[in-house]
Image (cartoon, rainbow, N blue to C red; front, side, top):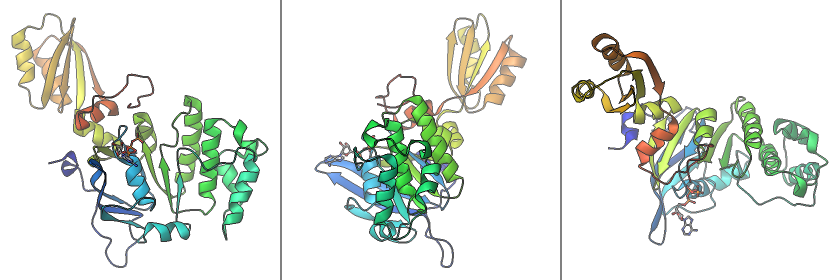
Amino acid sequence: MTFTDTLPAPEPAPAPVGTVPLAIDLRGLHKSFGTVRAVDGIDLAVRPGEVVAFLGPNGAGKTTTIDMLLGLARPDAGTVALHGMDPSRAIAEGRVSAVMQSGGLLKDLTVLETVQLTASFFRATRSVAEVMERAGIADIGARQVGKCSGGQQQRLRFALALLPDPDVLVLDEPTTGMDVEGRRDFWNALRADAARGRTILFATHYLEEADAYADRIVLVSHGRVVADGSAAQVKNLASGRLVSARLAGLDERGADALRTLPGVQSVEVRGDRVLVRTQDSDGVARHLLTATTASDVEITARGLEDAFLALTGDTTRTDDTTGSLA
Ligand SMILES: Nc1ncnc2c1ncn2[C@@H]1O[C@H](COP(=O)(O)OP(=O)(O)OP(=O)(O)O)[C@@H](O)[C@H]1O
């Protein structure tokens, strides 16, 4: 059983006749490169207006899934539908746009010229001024693309993706290589745009981005979905809470009494504090306050990073402050 079986269903069922089709509908996707199973049976149903983070470490299969979703790669097995259409038709009709990690920009043009040129390729688009405003690049129209920062270039790609006013926007690790401020500006622009009802799927290995900007997190590992739910559900599923209290002189018997409480996963003593990892923080707190001399009780939710490690068993994460996975 995967952890996805234990969460409220994200509804992979087909849309009944007469209802709005799913924005993104991936079923049984498989893709191998030689002996590497890059995508090993991914099902994903995204409703219109959802903002979904596709979260996983390097090599989890995110880009391969996105390539199939956009029709850039053909699945070995499985199907892709975007608003009920195959990817090439959805893209040709301007229903779907993508912001990829790199490439696709001419360094000698200015930002404004780039947006104007791209707009000229489409039959009908949003206005150049509007997409530049929405992407937060209205004030750098005269700047040469080659002189823009990584974050500004990504916001330019975002503006270009907005030109056909797509229903679905797909972003593959859009903030890779940006500094903290660039990432924040980028996500603020994207989030403001999402508030208007666009469906957004973004791949990331930044846990904090998934947590902060997505309504729903789909956690992938080794080409499979290992958890699917809100950030709170994913965290709760894997990790429960941490109850910490000051409790001097806790002996083995006392620690064992804590271990036998319902929902307790682990008990650790650090100096004069005891740390209890549990699914039932209320029960543990009640026990500590009524049956022991504990004081200064704190209850905290464990972070998404803990959830990620617990669910995927991945041990390749770095310890940097960005909360990314290497
Ligand atoms: N063209 C290819 N040829 C061979 N192997 C590939 C190819 N593309 C991807 N792979 C392998 O498939 C697996 C999944 O790769 P993918 O790029 O989809 O992962 P990812 O989650 O997007 O990782 P990252 O965060 O590094 O972009 C990896 O083991 C990768 O090495």
